[in-house]
Image 1: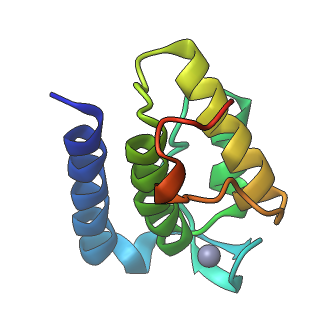
Image 2 (image 1 turned 180 degrees about the vertical axis):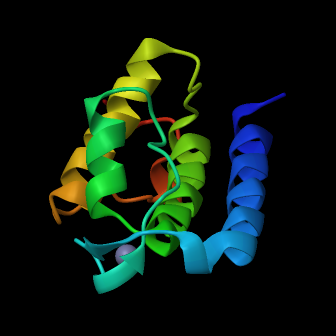
Image 3 (image 1 turned 30 degrees about the vertical axis):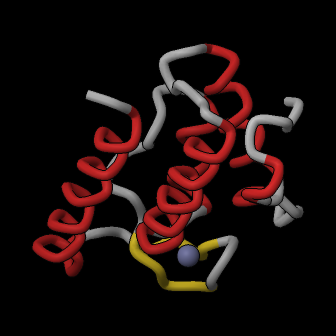
Length: 116
Ligand SMILES: [Zn+2]
């Protein structure tokens, strides 16, 4: 299965979990969109970054991020199975999602010419 369909499937699974269990989920103050937002049922990654995402990013913002990440993966031709690609995506999460900074632009005119 390629990265895109794997992430797409993950997003769909999440959506159905959100729909059926929303009332039972704990809430957090989401760094991106505000207080009283449903938290992810579990960290998206088994590392410190995953824990911080769960503590600071709500389910809706995480779903948005997954869509953005799919664009990045396609744009940069990333293979999430490669450590280097994961490092890049984790860096983007730190900067854009947790840090509030500006991410890499997805400029389709430069496809294949981006250094990272
Ligand atoms: Zn949010």
